[in-house]
Length: 125
Image (cartoon, rainbow, N blue to C red; front, top):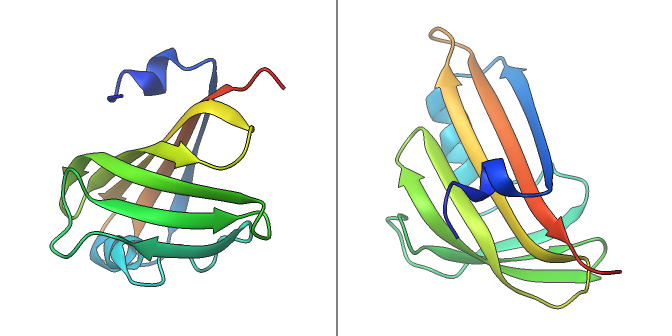
């Protein structure tokens, strides 16, 4: 899977968030040991690759109160700016394929735009 999936997937969700923090702070949050701790549907995110992260990095995530467990593999990594991953393994029948893209763009010294894109092909269910 590669970045074309974000244009070709049957279901695509994209939302930009104006954040009152420097882009570097938001990027550090995305790469932190407790990444996405503020996301309500995620129970746990655990990096399974050593730092420094880059293309090929993997992590495991639990969502929906443990009902969904996935392994993610990064296929794009632009340090400090953008990263994208696809789900390489999943325990549930929720989708056939899924990818996410995080884009952090500075909007001055104390602000940035964080654009989160999710693309997926739903399962037959």
